[in-house]
Length: 402
Image (cartoon, rainbow, N blue to C red; front, side, top):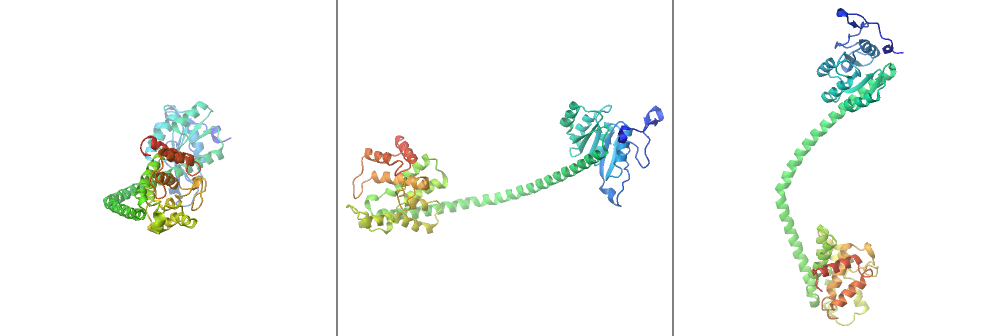
C-alpha cells in the first residue's frame, strides 16, 4: 500500500485547521522551494518543474517523497487559484491535479491551464472511477493520463516520466514549427523577389517567344509552299489539312502545345515529297511498283528533314505516322489502333478528306456522297472511329464543308 492510502495523522494548526507535518527535507505544501535530489553537481538546472495540486496536504507530501530521487523540481498548491499563480510565474512542464477540490474543480483548472499554457502536460488524480468525469476531463482539459488513489508508485513514476517526455516533444515540435515558419517566411520573401525579377523579364521573354514562333511559321509555310510548287494539284492542300486537323483536334478536346503541334504537322505532313520528281507527283497514269515505293518513303524522309530542326511542338511523330492505318495496314511501321499517335490518326482523316475533296492529276474530285461513304466505311479499318465521328459532327455543324 502506498503512502496515499495511509496518510499521516494531521496535527492541529493555529486557528484549529489541521495541517500535515512536513517530512525532513520536504517543502510545506504551497511553498515554491524544490526538494533536494540525488544528482551530480549542476544537475539542478536540468530538473523539470512540475506542479502538484491537491487540497489534501498528505497527498502532496506522499508524492513529494515518491519523487524525491527523480530529476524534478516539485512545486505544490492546495487550490486552483494558488496553482494558477504558480503557473504564471514558473515554467511548469507538468500539472498533477486532484479531481475534487473546493472551489474550482480539477477539470476546470485543467481547462484554464489548457488555454493559458497549452504546452503544459496535464494529469488528473482521482479517488474514484467516474466515467462521466473522465470524459469531461478529457474533452475540456485534454488530460494526458489519470492516476487513481491508491496508486502504484512505479506506475506514477512512469506516468510522470512519460508526461515530461511528452512536454519535451511538444516543446521541440513547437520550436521546429517556429523554425519552419521562419524559414517559410524567408522563402516567401525570396519568392516574391524572384517573382518581381521574373515579372520584369516577362515582357521581353514573351516578345522573344512571339518572334521565334513567327520565324518558325515563316519557315514552315515556306517549306510547305516548296512542296506544293512541285505539284499544282496540291496547292493549298497543306493549309487545308492543317485547318481540318485543328478543328477535329479541338472537337476531341486536344489543347495547348498538342493542338498547335497538330496544326503545324498538318502544314508539314508532306514535306518529305521534296525528294520526289515533279513528273512523279503529277503523273496521271497508274504508278509502277517502284514509283509507289518511292511515294511511300515520304513520311520517313519528312521526319528526317524535321528532326534536326528541334521544333517546339510534337510534330515529327505525327509526320512520320500520318499514313498508318487503324487496322495496321498502313506505313511506314504498320502500327494499329491506339499505338498510332492521336495527332497522326487525326491527320489521316484530314489528309484523306482533303485529297478526296480536291481534283488530282489522276482523278477528279469525288462527290459528297462518295467522300462521306468512304470515310464511314473506313472507320475501324483505315481510320479511328472516334475521329471519324468527330469529323461528321463538324460537318453537321457546317464547320467543315463537303
